[in-house]
Image (cartoon, rainbow, N blue to C red; front, side, top):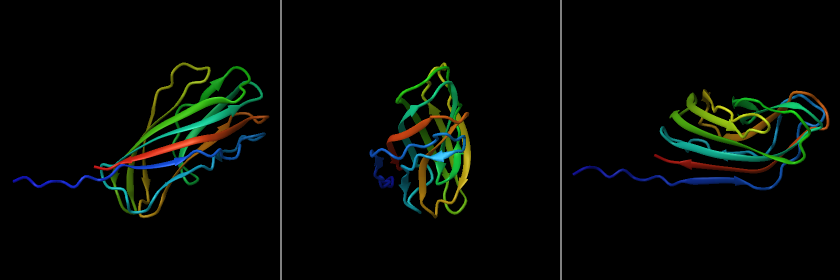
Amino acid sequence: MAAIKALRQTRTFSQSAAAAAVGASSTAAALLAHANTVPANTLQVGDVIRGRVVMLVTTAGAYAFTVALANGTTALITPASAVTTGTLTARAVTVEYEITVRAVGATGTLELVAQVSPLDTAALVPARASATVDLTADLALDTQVTFGTSGANSATGEQHNTRVDGQ
């Protein structure tokens, strides 16, 4: 008789409250500060983390805009930059990501795929990356925003949904 494998539950983490606006008059990377935290030592090899971030972007004019998925303040993956040719006012931008756990422990390995919704550009190709992360500590997934030029630019996190599917 074949052994029956115990099924792990799907866990969902959400942040719906708007975070503080970031990026105004600066070109430094800033966190949207609406992290979803996966508790330490809960991920297993084969787990898949899927997430979607929705933010509102306002600009003073043409700009380059880069978004990175981060663990705390450390960028894990940076999809292609989005560029616009004119002013945006509270334009919704989405970031979708999928992370597969390849190894756990203090030197855990994550395989990542992420894409930012296009603004005035053609469809963007998903970025792929691998990252070594200490999974014996909390995994605090957040979004970093960087504007290419300073001015009256802002990005406000509106929603961040994360789902962990166990193997």
